[in-house]
Each structure stands twice: as C-alpha cells, then as structure tokens.
Image 1 (cartoon, rainbow, N blue to C red):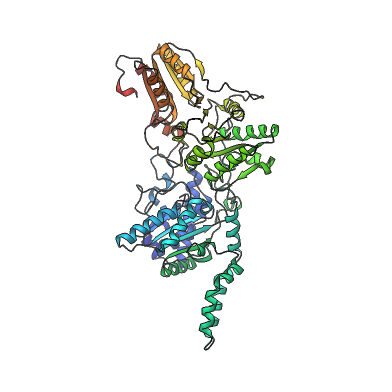
Image 2 (cartoon, rainbow, N blue to C red):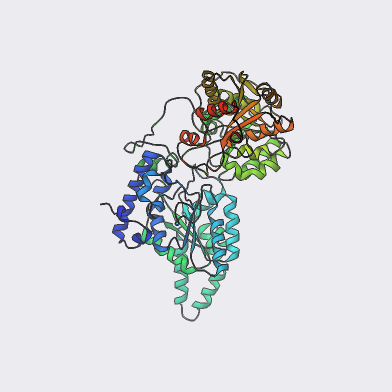
Length: 629
C-alpha cells in the first residue's frame, strides 16, 4: 500500500517524518503524472509545488486557516492531500473534480480561482473579516511570479501593506507563468534570486554589532536606520518592503523542512509578510523540466516518452488566425500583434519569430494591452489584440472607454469563444457577445468555418473603427482555405440554405450543426432555411425580418449564454418590427457550464444536431408554446 493511500487529510501529513515526507512527495508526483497523462491538465505547475504544498499544510491548520491559491492551476497536490485522492482519476472529467479550487468542492478550497492575480485581494478580504469579527485564523495567499506582475496584485499588496493585518503572501517563483515572463517585475525578481545573501548578511551584521561592548547597541540602531542602503546594495530593490511587507527569502521551494521553518517565522513575525520561494516548474518529470512552457497545460500524452497524442485533421481556428495575420503582416508593416502572456496559446509563435519588433507580449495585463493598442493605432499602426474570450472580461472598461468610445481601429481577436472543455466554468467564453454587444459602435464577427475566419480578419483590418472577431478553441471543419483574401460585405448575413417552414440562424461554427439539422428535417417533411449571421453590430436586420415574414418561425443557435446573446439580438429585432406573431426558439446556455469534453457539454446543454432538429420540428407544430424560448 502506498503512503499516499493513507493520506486522508493534512493532519496525516503533519505526522510524517522527513524521510516519509520525501517518499510522499515522490508518490504525489507519480500520481499527478499518471492522471494528467490520461486526462490532460496543468502538469508542470503542479510538479513544481509539491514540497511547497506539503510545508504549507504542515504549518497551517486548514480549513480553519485559509490557504488561497492564485489562478489555481497548481492545486493538484492540495487536492490529493485534502480528501480527494479517491476521486483524483476523475480530474477535469465530466462530473469529476475540477482542475481548479472550488468552494462547492471542498471546505479546504478557501476561494474559487481560475483567472490570475486574485489571491492577495481575496486574502486581504479574509483578513479584514477576521479582524473585524475578532477571530484568529491565519490567511495565506500563494501567487506565482507571473501572476504577481498584474495590476490587481499590486492594488492588493498596497492595501495589505497599509492595513498591517496578519497576512502571508507566498511568492512561488519559477521564472515562468504560462509563457516566459516579461517586464520590469520579472527583472526585479531575477535580481532577488541572484542575491540570496541579503537576509544572511543582514543577520550576521546585526549579531556582530550587538556583540560589541558599549557601542554595539548604538551602532545596531544606526544600522537599522540605514538598512535601506544595505538592501538596495544587496538586492537591487526593496519593492515589497516599501509596500509595507516584511520580505523573507529567497528560499529553496523543494526543501520541506526549510520551508516549514520559514513559514513559522513568517507567522511569528505578524503583519504583512511576503515569503519568496524558488521552485522548478515541472520538477521530477524530465520532459516537463526541459520544456515547462509546453507542459504547463497539456492534453493527453505518452508518459514514457512525453509525446503528445496528436489528432490528425483540420487545423485549429487558432492556427488559422496565426497563419493569417502572419501573411497579412508580410504585406503591411503597420500590422502589430499584442497578447497578454499567451503568445503560444493564441497562435502567435510564428508571428513573433518573423516579426519580433512588431510582437508585444505585455504579460498578464489585459487592460494595459488594450489601451496600449489604442495608442499604437493613434500612432499609425494596425494593432491586433489577441486575448481569450474569458480574459477579455478583465479589460472591458478599456475596450469600452479607451477604444470604442473614441472609435479607434483596434482588432480584437477573441480566441476560445464558446465552450473550452475541461478547464471549466472559469474559462468558458460564453459571455463575450453579451458584453460586447452593449457597446454601440463595436462590430462583432464570427466565422462559420476557418476559411471564412481568414476573410473576416482581412476585412476587420480594413474597417475604420474597432472590431471583434470571435472564434472557438479546437479544430476547424476541414474546409479548403482560399489562396487569396476577400473583403466581406460588412453587416450582411449569408443565406446558406433556403426554406419555407422554419429558419435556423447560426452564429459562428455552429452554423454547420444548423445545416446538418436542416438536412435531417428535410427527411421529416420540414423545409428549413439556414442563415449564417456572420455579423452582430451591425446586424443584418433585413435578412432577419425577411426570413421571419417568409417562414414565421425562427430558431437561433449560439455557442454562448442566452442572456444578451445573438438570440436576444434577434428577439429585439422582432420586437422593434412588431413581429409579435413570429415564433422564436433559442438554443444556447442558460447557466454557468461545468467542465468536461466540449461535445458532451454541448450535448447536455442542447447545442446539438438532435436538439436543433427537435426544436425546429416543435416550433412547426400547433402545440408550440412556452418551451420555445
């Protein structure tokens, strides 16, 4: 029986000897590699925090004490030792445990996370609630060196330093987030890493001065007054202490005993304390150690070789985006690309190699990326900002005010629009249509296939104001790609298939599902028209009204929330035109969507050929009523 099998809670970890802890760490790494190889997931981040997690749970008394994990993609170790190892094989599977912390999954998950840079804010909130209620639990936030580069983290550090409440921030420094870290903060941390002598020298000097008879105490006092000079000399920066934190470290993040001692010292110190821990991302699995950026988040792979199980077929929409803007950039030197720490994920690797001076990875700073792009556009460039749909939520103010209010021509390439699968509800891109559609002069484009995507990108770069082009994660339909780009007729939908009984309107690649459903309906004697809407803001009202009057029945299909989505836009057109006798059925998502394979989640939510066919058939019957909307 493995030692891991006997660990049911952190209290079991607290009882282990140093040798047993090392064995447990090996077994945990083995288990994580086994499950992620089968299910996919975040491998390298979790392998890097094994000892850190064990040390935290040996020093803190969770769930009474609150341990908050930033982003949350490094919590597999935490899950394994907090009563979830018997379900660990279900990680990221439909109905299984999440790849991120969730309040509803375990009392040990003190805060649900999925987007970066939130942990310190949540920890400060916990600490303030604790102090106001007269309670005495401890609060610790674990944040990576990539996440701490974002503005929200500094807002929280500034607040925490001024409050002086007891709070510990553990800076897990592995020199990477998803891609290689960039910016001044990364450089600052690098200087700290290369000056581990600071705390040792400081302690040695203080001890030496106190030993000098009579004059030692005054000298020690003087040294304390000029300590900033020593800090600047030894570590080339005192950012965290200037923010009001006691800085401890850097420390070896793979030495459990050393970390325990440091965490206990931090708790005894009181007030805001930042513990700087150096870890190796991917530790214990050579492929992940050698390529931590590749093994950050992975699909299934062969454990023995580290080779990914590649699926043959059509290129992904992300790949088509990357190749398209690279081709366009060859023709126009004004085109530049910006991303927020997601260069590889957004398909910009080739662009960055071909045009390094025109590629800007700003780190985890979506707000800055958007406003920076606005300045670039006003300066005569053609910026394309590539951000996942779910992360666009973080830059909404900048999109609305800094770009759209001023009608500045910035192209937003919104990747991962719709369901993304196993990463779950924090990463599904199912709200962007609603929040983009509220902005008056922001066109929203969604391609029916990958060939149309390249033409939409080309068209977007020729439009005079801001534009959103949204597309999903995953492979395209496998249609041929035209050699030459075409300008699309802005604001015009495409009638893919005529019909007299019902009109099915799709937005994005779901149009293909609509066409297949229409073909099956033909066998039932129902003649269904299919519309590829293509544009929202501007919306092809003429097409919608014409089809509404021709068939009297509309079904809208979207890979998006029903609240404020494309179906809502169609309903508004019917209301504006007083077409209250037209029957309207809408297919989309009605709530937050859990994690699991995209196909299974869509089937469960009714976004399938069968569901489209069933709704279209039902809307053609006399019994159609409240079930339609």
